[in-house]
Image (cartoon, rainbow, N blue to C red):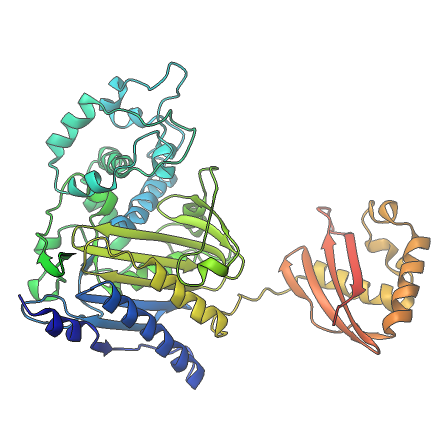
Length: 501
């Protein structure tokens, strides 16, 4: 075993491999330097033998870097092609495969799980009034099964026959199904069995053929020990101030909950594919799964919780509203918008992924130390990108109806009278504030700020709403316009007010 000093030096020696920079300016490079520093500190503080992390944006891997070594014996450096087990980040593959089978008419999410896994029919419910477990409950972790992270991870190599016997015997419940979210690896192993029974093939083959192969993820799969040894990152456990090698767990019945092995290059293809599902839009939908179905991964279980943002910025940030979706955790962040994330903890490995659909950007990291969840480093890196101006919200273009409504808003201000747009007002508009009241309001506003340039661009928040700021003779006006669900759309609200300095 190499000395602690020797391996520590290896772990903080980085192999930089930036790919396809979004922009050839120094600001991006400076931000990536800050990201490098975050992960270098994380690797040193957490005793990580090796890790790889990357940034995906605009459909491609724009930055990737390996640090440290794949194994402590050969000292092979980590590269973007090094293979890591990603543990529970595997669950999103399982969830999307279930949704794809739903799309194909092979199963229903609200059907009882026992319809597809007959062994569940003999399970004794925890209470007389408890409902039976649905497929949807397994996806959302609301099946009433107990949290089982340490136990579930060790079940990865469980033979299918032994899993069948476990299911026949039944398990105790933690709650009645459908009353709360409680994370269950067993639940996702059952989803793997559902995939196998419905498709008529082992779940690993079905997931690979439906998702991994069409996306060109040629190095990704469930048979970890079948991959070339020189590419595999060996897992380690850190305890008593030393590393201990962790034996690679074989493929088995529980792999659907955490058995995927992949590389940074391959995983970036998966992230780019998921991010491409946002925003909803017209145009070709090439698959392998429909964009609308991918967006269902963010559909939560309706048991939201408040949490702090991970990382060093979390203590001073507003709290997030989060819920478990399907293989991903959906949370709304006051700076990052919609976030989809998941960690992976496993004997010998740790990982984390963060997707930012509003910006088409994602950050991920894989490590080869047991349960070394890199959530703090990944979220800190995302905040560096956000506060450094790297994240650019996807722009929306105003359609003809919204553009016409905005033009009408300008005319209303210029004329000081809503009657100039009478044909474009919804039936509620003058009931909520009559024309005389609008004339007084507009007169007072004009007296305060003077004439305004009403040709400033509109910032749509959707096809029927938008905001704007006008520069005026003595200040600025901020406003918004919202259309009604009529055909054609008409103006249901218009706000105009002085913008504070």
